[in-house]
Length: 313
Image (cartoon, rainbow, N blue to C red; front, side, top):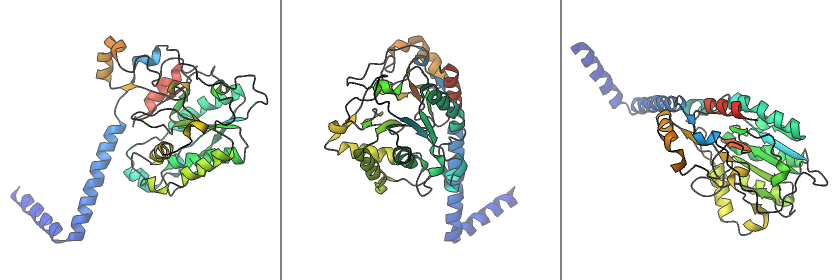
């Protein structure tokens, strides 16, 4: 025992005397701690809040909509992407969240929906810009559909967004006013969410997307929990003078209901008093019958998404 202690002390002295060895050791320890914490988060168990099984009528948009009899009929396109096949080594090593397998789970759900309503679905994964976190490449995928496919409207859906009510048609919440080019939904904590949104094919929209893409100071290092694209969007919208001229923000349940997830113990406790929860009958959170359920803000998404897919109609 004494011999082992002496050897350990000698090793520590050697490391301390060498700044390079000290730095390498500190980095190795930091990476190991990071991986342990991220693995713990990835294995965390979640359950759908009771409201996922309770119906709530989502308020209709307050603006005039195209409706199902629009003439000419708009070409509506949906797109999403994943970096699972082209993930940078830094993301695999330092990534706090692991969304591998998410798009594989939700792709068929999206494909069935577009087939039912005659829409177009595009996987933008091959357009990934590896110099940025993958979330930024949503802008490239949307631009491609506007320019090359000449889509009238494009709906961006994060891979973790599940279409829950396929009876809902996108035309029913698209604005009839041709000067409205962007549909957004509110985000928790203020601002707007970049996980699900719609954009109209126009010069204004293409310029907006280009300016958003060029906000390079907001780009976060690869592997962090946040990519920076949502922060850039919030900043741009906050400082936009002509917001009301071109942008609409219907109730979040219109197309971007956030899924409320609870830890098992919390779920069992709240189930007895669900009507007292601030998210009960709240337009921002997913209730049965909403169009889209967005599993935002959760590190371990796979089981929750599987549960949602079992309830999707």
